[in-house]
Length: 564
Ligand SMILES: [Zn+2]
Figure (cartoon, rainbow, N blue to C red):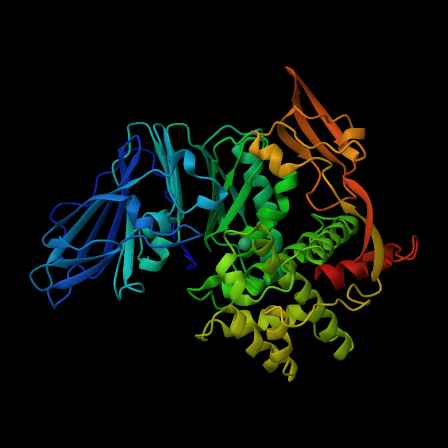
């Protein structure tokens, strides 16, 4: 749900609520409700007024986040007040002109098939559910902008539910707001709330975590205050939902999904709040990038260099500027991005390739984040140099925030238009070539001002020291340990079963990696530097000589690189 819901209350529904009154008169407002049908299915109800032509076209959930044909999860579709016909995603309802219609159907759980790549499907368990609206809600052709409201349907006794949809109980949003939502409910739903300025932040979590819901709320509240300060806008109501992903041996996955007035988190067990800070701040930044900077087109992946990359850039900037990160944290993050981009085998992929393979190929998925992040750093340095420090990327983005109130352009083209308006320079062609992989992206040496220098350094190549593909094929039983490699030196042997990776970053040979393994019935942790003897050259930000960044300089760097 992306609209700002100024004074709306967050309703946290404490018990089963009644469905809409049976005698509700026909209304142009579409009324959505979700409840639980049984231990595996959600029950959806939509009340709407049929079109004057006597024929209304229903669009069941289509595709989202890499999952196609979501409509196949829909069953028991029935329409009161009309007759429904058709197969596939689109169904036709015939009815008396302007008839009051009630559409009802069930949506099956994605259940244990759900992983980070299948976040489009709802999860419905006997004592909780979680969903993103894209996998649940049908729409009516031509009514995406029609007013819509939401109520909870029938929930099992004792359940609580929370969602950004709660904002649409007392006032209407649009059908698009209904679809772009996240919800969580259950018997043991953990709820926490924090006041941030004039607004309330709520956290709603199901599952077992190593931290209380309030600790997550506290972390997000700090981020929320920092980001609103950056944008110079008062906080508004916000909700964070958290639900578990199925346990996959040896795999830790954590994914966030920005919703404009909330975000969702899905994670395998063991989510660590410190390690999650960057993702939390990134998801919160989506409130602006792209939603308050023009939004995104239907084919969103084409603009991911802006909506994800510029988001990542601003996230690092604000985390440093607000003091949540130190200068070392900030540089560490920048160097991680530089390394990942330089070693991404798909770094010259085109926008079309990204759109086609984003959800299937991890290298392609990461690319627009890093490409956009580095492009933003490049543009900021370029603008500051050209204007002798007067104008930076912040100024352009804040101007874009204003322009977005009246513009029909989506985030990326609105950025190009605003950049031209603010600077008087037309950099659209060059940016488009970099965003499309047609031109290489090279950070100038002064991209971090006097605080750090971009230099080309020699680094060892990353290696796990064992054969990951063969290990995965053997159910995470280690295969192919190289006796001359670092895993062997660290004590790893074929036949050990990997339970989890507890440290390290895939692709980064400079960070120690740690695997928890089952060694013939004994659990132990094996640590080593995942570096091969092979080396390569990579640009890295090297901090100004020790002592050169004194107290005054540190504040200047925080202003320059953190926008503080
Ligand atoms: Zn994102």
